[in-house]
Length: 266
Image 1 (cartoon, rainbow, N blue to C red):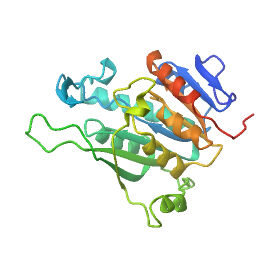
Image 2 (image 1 turned 60 degrees about the vertical axis):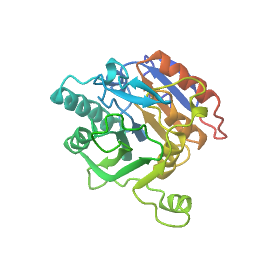
Image 3 (image 1 turned 90 degrees about the vertical axis):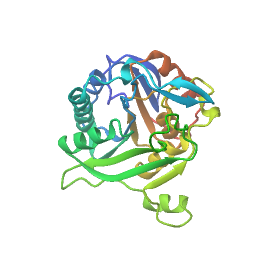
């Protein structure tokens, strides 16, 4: 993995199978060797921090996540998405794939940006949450889903990996469909600290198992509390996580230290 990363990058935490990098993903991605990443999972800002309210733990709370989740306008949001997706394409292997999660606030811009930057969308996954926050305004349907786009490079020679039989086995011997039903993140997965958009481990485990092989390299450019890394290491993959918030990387480090792997890396 050391040959993939520029030696000048500020490594926050590292071990042979895992590196956490503190910094702006736009700058860090430029310093990763081209076509070296097997799979990318990204959970970018949703741009839904609009001073509204939601329900959390039975209490009304602000939907604001932080300045990083505020949009400066439609065109600025779309430029942001095109820029980081363009950088991800450069470091992704020809047969690699990228998964991007989002809500309606940002996912349509992301879908367009993927096609503009030379990707072909493979699947449009709907993650249906069994326990979403209630709808306090009562003026629309309760928001209970997120979209996860799965894409590959739009080139004739690109052949993305799909572990079809593994997914079929997980689904009781039947083909797995593109609607995934499950709960929000369990409290036990937040024991090392909280992140406002933390994904449940079962979701990332499915993504890792569906599109990578043991020993392959997974990258998350907005790694937050490190769920992608937990899933990757748990199943013998390597991981690079990037975030510009030291508080969130601290949570990631604590979680990753708890994950053991039997795979040896040079």
